Amino acid sequence: MQGLIALLAGAGLSALVIRAMIAIAPRVGLVDLPGEHKQHEQVTPFVGGFGVLAALLVAVALLILEYPDRLVAWLSLLVCGVVMFGVGLADDRWKLSARIRLVIQAGLALLMVYGGGVVLADVGDAFFVGALTMGFAAAVPFTVFGTVGCINALNMVDGIDGLSGTIAAGTLALIALVAGLGGDGATFLLALCLLGGVLGFLWFNLRFGNQHRALVFMGDNGSMTLGLLLCWLLITITQGPNALVPPIVALWIFALPLVDTLSVMFRRMWMGKSPFSPDRNHLHHLLQRAGFRVENTVGIMGTLHFALGATGIAGAWLGVPEGVLAIGWLVVFLAYFRLTARPWRFVPMLRGFHRAFGLTPARNLGVFMGNCTLEHVEQINALVAPQLDENTVFRTRLYQRKGTAGPAGTRYAVVQIIIDDEVAPLRYQDLYMRLIRRASRPVKGIYVRSYVQRDPHNERRNQSHPVDRDRRLAERRRADCALVEESYTYVRNGRIVDQQIHHPRTVTSP
Image (cartoon, rainbow, N blue to C red; front, side):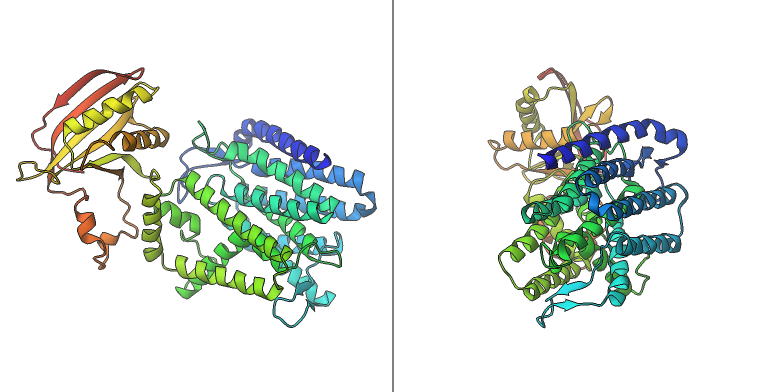
């Protein structure tokens, strides 16, 4: 019951604080402007850390009330969180140098050790030689290194709406599970309260329902604060005589950010670049390049992260030797690195999965129908129209290869949904794709797929590998095709109310 109260209190206060900061942020310059390499097109407040900080304040208050004998540790936790939040906020606002950030992060790690008693000294039996424990003199720099790495690993995956929050929420949920079943009430309370804070933030940051973009960003103020707090919790559950799980399990619980960050840095060095040079080869970049939408990317990575963490915890509870868990984690890392180090091979593979699952691409511009006539498309639109609530216009363009009389295989149609003189947003395209696949089943010979904006990155056709060339040639949008018919089908309240057909003279295929 106490855990539920902590969760709800953290979530409620986080949501209230973030809602208030959405109104205040533009007045004080706490907004992220579009441009440069950024993907968003709207001015967006980066105030997610305010919700995390609010949840931390609730957690510290509850911890002081329930466990007053550890007052120094809780005050150290509070100072670490507040200072890290302040540094992240300053970095968001004024762009601090990397050296300043690293020095302050290292200083807060020392406060964790000396004030909170949180020190990474035991590495367990990861090398099959028995439990290895470092002396305090060696454990302190090791703790500092691990803490700084954890902070920046979470910060580096904060690249799209909802991703860092989802990763943090999965990590906190796993820590809460371990602490709850292990009887560590203080860690359980802290993890649940912070989980509530992250959930309050995700309410404004995730894309779901009618919310098609993030209303707020996490910002460095949120990701750096969460990275520090997650490190505190991971060390707590894996160290000391009352450790709940072996130390190697911490790597599994925080697997995806660590594996992704290390892989990207090793790849940069492999390519002769600085490990800190920016690029777009994180896993979320590769998934998006393969056509996965932001929602799909967050779901895939969040599920993968949670599954890896659950695997490590389950292995520990089932008595799997720590050395075997360490080898397993290393195998995951090497496999991940091998795949992502060659994006020109990995991205086409991901595209294959994308097509296999029938997902709507992020660059979707409509629906492509091959081997069809205008009558076929009109028949399908008539079946789909009653299932659409909005007033819409189907714009259908039929293309035919030049110099042919139009036998099967030489024609294709492109159907787009037009709302308010613009192409409909992805949620309409997604709905239409599902409906049209269902409606086109009785029509023999037609194949349906998403009509996408071509992305020059990692295109198979631009490479010297003629894999699938013959198969893809038949469905490729060809430059020697011309627009032969164009129709506009007007739908109102689920009924076709008008239809206009045009016969352009010469229009080149897109």
